[in-house]
Image (cartoon, rainbow, N blue to C red; front, side, top):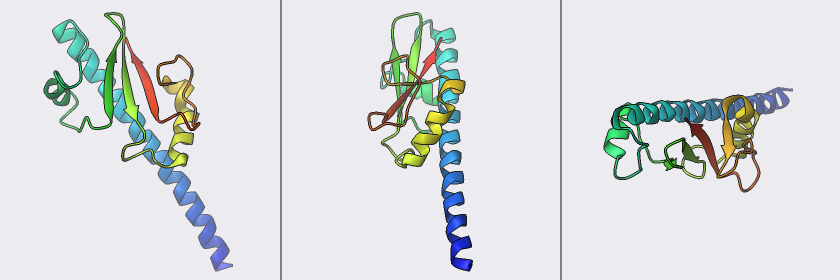
Amino acid sequence: IIGILASAMLLLMGTAEDKAEATAILSDMRSMKSAMIIFKLEKGRWPERTSDDAEIQRLFGGASLENFDLVSSGDEYALVRYDLDNNKGKSPGVRKKLALMAESSGLFKKDTSLPYTADEDGTEVDMKVH
């Protein structure tokens, strides 16, 4: 009986940990989105990775930009892209949790307007900034 209860607890803890990691990724993406909007308001253009990293990192509160890419599609909007193959997100459970949050959080599959799904191609997730 104790073994069964212990296995059930491990399954529940794994699910809660995946949800927490997915929520942290979503929170980081929203913070990056805010940093990009502030940058656009101050500079009149969307930021670019590498050339504007120091300024974006300052606006992002000094956090690492390691898993992020910033993609500009002209003046109208840009994308915050998060690479799930780095550090967080390796777990299929994290990807599934992000997929469940996709529609309500504005997460899209890379280079599409389709909601993010946790399929094998779902290694990068986009959030539109406008």
